[in-house]
Amino acid sequence: MTDLIAATIFPILKSVYELARRRELDPVAVLVLLGVTASILALCVGGDPRVLLIRESFFTGAFGAACLLSLALPRPIMFYFGRYFIAGKDPQKRDTFNEKWQNPVVRRAHRLITAVWGLVYLGEFAIRVVLVYTLPAPIVLAVTPLLIGVGTMSTIIWTFHYANRVRRISDPKG
Image 1 (cartoon, rainbow, N blue to C red):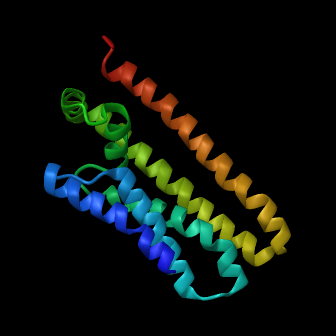
Image 2 (image 1 turned 120 degrees about the vertical axis):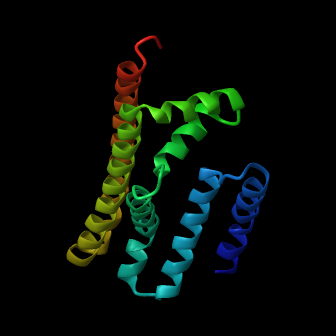
């Protein structure tokens, strides 16, 4: 547990630094922090073998819930991930990315992408819980890595295809 708590120090310090310097959070640092926090909470729940089998999905469940909750915010969480991966720290690219938010097609796309990620990851968590409580542990251990892998890769592929389609529709010039 001490190691997990120590692992939160860097993401917390990086997030505080980015917040103080740029008035924004680094989405990857927040994601790491969310994962470590979910792991710490899972350890606090106890040593029930079924909880240990579910533990890896506490993060996906937490991230899925964060995605869906962020839909109530002015900009959903996947807007920030998109900006982080597309524009990086380049001020001009970031400004261009931010300006695209004015387009209703782009806003709708970010919200749909966020909702899909939220539903996929909450779904993965729910399916894992059902599997853990209905199947023997060896089968759960064999099936669940495929579940999260296929779910994540499918969602990434869908996101890229959908975002490219939206980009062509919202900005036909390029």
